[in-house]
Image (cartoon, rainbow, N blue to C red):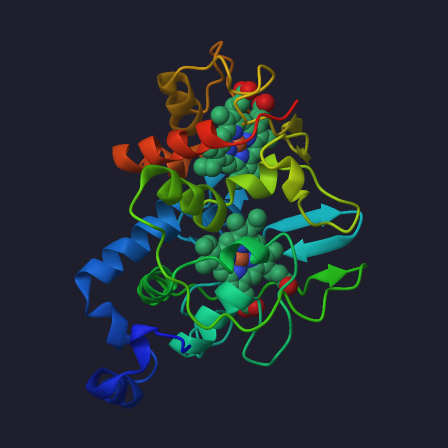
Length: 285
Ligand code: HEC
Ligand code: HEC
């Protein structure tokens, strides 16, 4: 099996080599639209990679990095993923950027650490990771040198074998929803309990319980399974309102860090897929 990123074929590759790493993918408008949707809406990369002020995202700094995640095992700083050549990813090739997103390996061979949701991004399809790369090439470059992350726990040697090729999900609501909720939107990274090694406990998928501290105090990710202590008695409309407007079933505003502002623009079809998948999960108390 081979990596089928559309970036490395024929004349487009020749043109790309000649012009530098940028334009090959950007010339496919459908791919670029898909990439914009993945990065800005369902993937919500800016939820971690765009610096936040008291008023939300800092204007003119989209994806420029610098947000700090201060936890007992690490002090991670989100990277600048704009095309700035000095402080961002401007000098990386398409293949290097795709590998960083999907395998967590930088061009220099070093490993990207948490909370970048590496284990879930391994599931991104070849076309979707190529779309993300194409779109990231087009965002305004911002010069912003961010501090290095410090990991007080050992990072694994890798997040798994090289990702050669990932097909898109089967064309069925539950399969599409599973892909959306896990690989793209990483809902399950926040909504699944953590094992002591920092990995999600996949035997309790969607059971909630992870705590998030920030200026808002402490928020606890909820149970998304069809159990009565989860979304069992919620209507589809209530789930959609929680995801896109940040209101719980009883109307209570939900606290960060869930990316409501990005999810607001999710398509009706994807919201339908999301619900079909959540309703198919094993109920967890
Ligand atoms: C939950 C927070 C979070 C989310 C969501 C997230 N990232 Fe990250 N990302 C990070 C952090 C933190 C780092 C730096 C980790 C380190 O220093 O090892 C990082 C590093 C990276 C890097 C490496 C850049 C470099 O210069 O080393 C790339 C590329 C990247 N992220 C792309 C993305 C893309 C694309 C998305 C959306 C699909 C995304 N990230 C979503 C937190 C996140
Ligand atoms: C960065 C972490 C994070 C991500 C990613 C995330 N959530 Fe959440 N979510 C939370 C937290 C924390 C809460 C609870 C907030 C509160 O109670 O104020 C929450 C609340 C919810 C609720 C309301 C539950 C209730 O009982 O009120 C729903 C529904 C939900 N999330 C679904 C999703 C879906 C679907 C996705 C992916 C599209 C997602 N979440 C992504 C952290 C996250």
